[in-house]
Amino acid sequence: MLTPAADGRQATIPRCVSAAASSGQYTCGSCDRTSTLPHLDARGNCPGCRASIPRPGLFDSAYTILLWLLAFAFGSRGDPIGAFFMAFFGIYPVMLVDTVLHEGAHALVGRLLGWRVYAVAIGAGEVSSRLRFGRAEITFHRRLLRGGHCLAAPEVGNPSPGAIALFTAAPTFLHAILAAVALRWASAESLGGMAAAMFVVSNALLVPANLWPRRVADRGPDVWTDGKTLIDLCRSRDAELARWSLSARYLATQHERKPEEAFDVAERALAREPGNQAAAACFTIAARMTGRWEAALPHVVAYARAMELAFPRELRKLPDRALAARGLFRGSEHEEYMRGSILVSLDRLDEVLALSERGVARATSEETRALWQGCVALSLLMAERDLDRAEEAARYAYERLPWVPFVEAAWGMARIERGDAREGLRAFARAARTNPEATVELRAAWTVVARAVEGRPECAVPAELQAPTVWPACRRRAERALAR
Image 1 (spheres, rainbow, N blue to C red):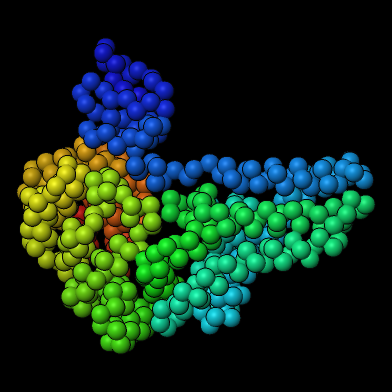
Image 2 (cartoon, one colour):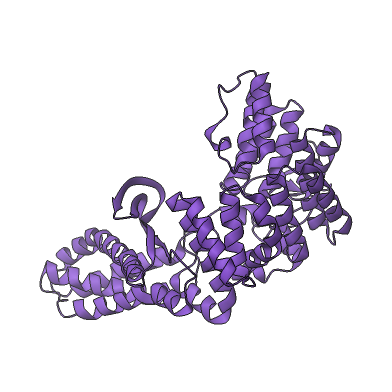
């Protein structure tokens, strides 16, 4: 962690200490973002770094070491040298086979339930190869031994609790059965017997590994094991059903690239259950995907409530102030924020500005006030007016919540409009590291502006700004920059 020293130089202090400079500013030990609000954890990390930096895979490492030791101890009774080489070189193929079997079990059960299997991934990180199996996309990633995931959901309607439980728990039962069956061939007398022993140990260890509720390394901040899904299904059934329903509609829209069909399905579901929040949320998502913003606006309250239910359990437990520090609203403020996002899509920027100013006036904490000031800055910058006020609002938000992607994007946009393209692009890069999927349109549009400011304009509007769902203000600003 770096803090300003008395003589103006940079003084280094341990990262594990959450220290504040004499000016009352707190500096993150991982990304060097500085805030006037003390939201650093015991290790000196800000909420943005806690959300974006994968935690070390201690559980995975312990699993690998334990598997190696057990396999070697079992095989060393007959042939110690052969056991050593089998344990050392055989562990990785066994782990890869178990990963394929695990994700294959998810996919098979999904198909037996009548669900659509959209994607099966083996490993984590960058995709190294892809192939199609029927309508499903199978991807292999560079970190092959970092687990995987399977995306499946019903194409019509919402999943039932029993179906979710069966889909989630199937691989764990498979590991238990495989361990029991392979035990018959396990022995220390041959390499094949030692390989079977490793297979038994690996599958036996994977049963508690899958049932134990923990985050999965290299999978983002809110990706958990199958056991966590089963526990959440028992503890908060409505929230888990809402999350699965939203995921089903999102998958149908994104992977099929048929938003019109998704809209028709969601519209029929809402007609059958007009009071169902999950159905209203699915309809809103489909309406947004098809550019029918006016149809989405009446259901924004149900949409916001369903999205809150879909928050991970640990986020739902946070108090309002801590939730705002993560860049999220709760309750009526969240509903207003979601309403503003739809109004922006309709290009009703004056209403968005009025809504944001109301949020600033009614804010109950410094964090929520900073979030609304970020919204004020975005409204003014997209409307291309009152740059001084926009910069003041963006600075206010950025000084307090620099790790929130849309706040950091607003600050970058303000710097670009002031001619400081380099600092603006740096802010965009930090926002993208925190959450690559957030503020994509804003960053794309003002990157065009930044390059025009630097004297190296684009030749055409980027592809991500040409979709019908893009905010009109973003496309308009990029076109104006290109026209200079």
